[in-house]
Length: 344
Ligand code: ADP
Ligand code: MG
Image (cartoon, rainbow, N blue to C red):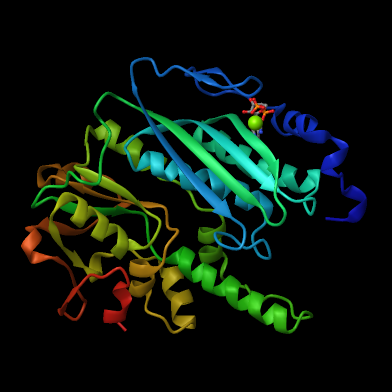
């Protein structure tokens, strides 16, 4: 951004800034009775149940502004929360967004961030209904709360999988992690040799997965259409192994996972090989995929095969059996939160 285009936040003041950032909001949901502009927002869920989830994102811990465009960061800040709502089998309807930033940021920089926020709101039909704006000494801090609705008692917990249920995942896994490896590598080169241009040629797939993730609205809509209610569900933010262990522990079950069934994209495999790492390891222990991991009764298998974006990767067992992966070579290993040590 050139210096001439820089508007100091102090020139608008806090209320002027909030008004600037929120003046074009168009509401998408009948449940949004009152949005930005009062002491609180008002929501009516017309007899449905409400789910609420919140996430805090800290510069230097959760994101790195050296390689994360602000628009993408705004988009992703919303998506990670919507993903948690979908993981409850609910439909997101509203978000609140709170920010803290230093005078290092200009109005134009915040505009870029909000462009991403509004793009996600538009795509997923959610309303931004409030937030808070404050200063920080250093660094950018983002807190998003997402609210969603679900038909009474149709929400899906982590703790209710049953023995014999099929273990399923949406989409493909591990790509965001490989994207992160590329961006971290280029950052390191740049820090050591500031003149060198980044070499990200051909890696748009994995970098796109990291910088512009999507939440699985389509999968939850598919469940509703086919009248499938998963017996348990979680979103994959920390890698497949870690999330499988959550389902097993909370449902008091074991499971068998087949390595050959884990969905990985061809582009991700090629990129992983460039780093000489195992694609399966990326899927198991990477993170930030925002896919859904869920269990369904075997009787629903016929409905699932209708959706090519869903892969059956294993099944749930007695707790005594523990959580295991059967590798492509046929050997059996315990799944650990750092699952890839076994596979190296
Ligand atoms: P209060 O003093 O009652 O907390 P604020 O002045 O903080 O009110 O906020 C005024 C209105 O603007 C409220 O509706 C609030 O939810 C909304 N708001 C504040 N900051 C943001 C933001 N960063 N993004 C969206 N809405 C915001
Ligand atoms: Mg306030």
